[in-house]
Structure formats: C-alpha cells, structure tokens
Image 1: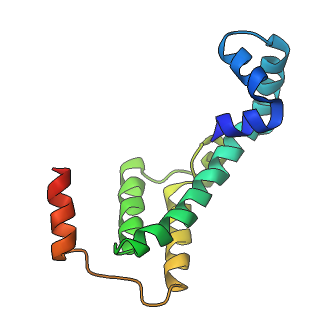
Image 2 (image 1 turned 60 degrees about the vertical axis):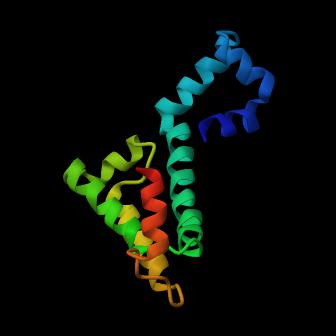
Length: 130
C-alpha cells in the first residue's frame, strides 16, 4: 500500500531511485512526513480498513460466514492485549477493536449473510488447504 502511495506522489522513477539509494532529498522529505504526522502509516492504516470493508463482501459471496472475520479480529485482540487507542496512530493497521466494531456494523447492514461454515463445500476446501 505504501509503495502505491509513493509512486502516486513521486513517480515510479523516484521510487525506484529510493530503492537503489538515490534521491536523498526525497528520502529526507519522507522521513519528515513520518515524524510530523505518521503520513505513510496513516495511508496504510486507512487502506487496511478499506481492505476489510472490501474483503468482507467477497468472503460472503464465496459462501463464508462473515462473523469469521469478527472472530479472527477477536483472536488478534486477545493476543495483543488491551492496546491503548493512541497506539492506532503508530500502527500501520487499525487496532483489532476498531476492526471488530467496523465488521459488526457491516454485517448488521447485510441481508441474509451465510452463517454455516461446516458445509460439505467448506470441508472440501479446508481439506485442500491441509
């Protein structure tokens, strides 16, 4: 996500140059943006939230229970403990609690989402993954 933003803002040649150690003035400018307000992190944070929003309908269309996304984020929250809200500005992903709330809100707006994941189709797909 960050690379896409950099290319959009500076152009592919400049980004490739950065990767090769060129353009120190652009690198300094990027460093200043991160220090000033976490600009690059914020882009990634927002893009991850967008990926959640876009991914949920795709998983439902594939026949998955959308509550699986909620359960996944609940596991992440349990593993990470109670992270202070202020930490979301220092993270490149939304906090698990934010993602739980957003997913539950999206699910509440859905009409008849699938609920069963223990179907023959699901078991067949799961067997292919193991």
